[in-house]
Length: 337
Image 1 (cartoon, rainbow, N blue to C red):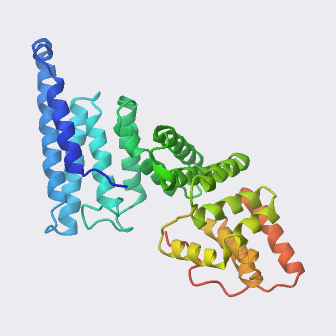
Image 2 (image 1 turned 120 degrees about the horizontal axis):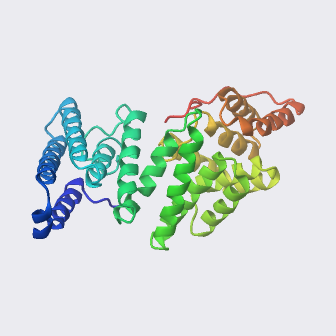
């Protein structure tokens, strides 16, 4: 979707800040308040200047990174000067997100996996959390929900913090769906519902995940990856035959399309190894039993989602009973993300 440029966002926000203080507010302010407001305004201005520097195409990657660092430090100084203000946190989140994570509308050349680190994702999430905590009714909260949900999901890596990350993502997806009120269009609705369903499956809420997937595939022309997600949820819920039929309904061209999406990183799976379940089930659906067994073995070896590994072992045992031999591991056996 089209995202407003950071500069426009900041100009509008600055105008809002300037109009907030009335003559009477200034008259009633203490000297300490006046000093804090002056420091706050100066720090915001310094942050904006450094932000604009970070977007200069002529600057080197290191110069851009340094400008982003200065901008973030300035915004944090503004937040320290006036702790109740929300604007510095919104700008920190936007700055780091649009620098390192907004690849389609990247304002710099830093949109690369080497820069989009978990630590930077946490900075964005924490900043936007602080922003929402201070102004939950600000309409800009609606703009960050999907991005924050995806960042939380990408931080899932098999640690005890995963559950809280997924719960946060699910809340944001639900809030985005509630706010959309049907205005996102079928593709947007399908993405939100599909992502929510995937999150619910990772939380082992399979009945809710299946119901949400079914909503996603009925709002419009569902992507193959959404149908495959439904199939995986069905299989994990003990509905294997229906799962295979869902995949077969997409045809072998569907498997090719899913593979292409995966290789282009148009879809991602967490934790590492989760994608093997999808490819195992899909190959099994089309009778590619050797490849399926290879993928099942890779899934089990990855340790991804222990709660679903017993079901994967059932598939392995069924294939071994038919004396199927695993095919050589595919060239993209590791998640590209």
